[in-house]
Image 1 (cartoon, rainbow, N blue to C red):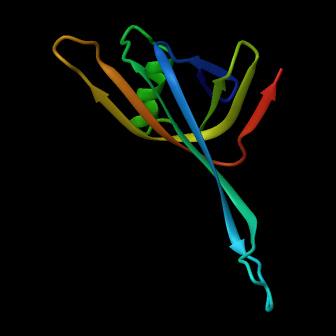
Image 2 (image 1 turned 90 degrees about the vertical axis):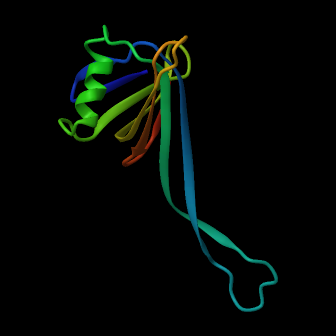
Length: 124
């Protein structure tokens, strides 16, 4: 996975999992005489997270995430690869950073984000 700010790509090292959740709101659309509730889809939103091992030697991607968390960068574009050529793409804000460390393990990080605008899929 990678984050983009403008045309600059920031691949994020050591991230090994991502999740995207798309939600569609709906509004009731039934009328007098209907026996069942009917709903029409309205606005959509997407959120997600990514996680992996903290890598302080990653001076691009993970360093860039730190700049986002510290408020130095606004919305960025996320690219979430499904395979070598296909990916989801959309603008997002990183909302949460959680780090964890154990005596016998590596430091891990998880990051939550909120999408803004449309999420697209490129099946190259």
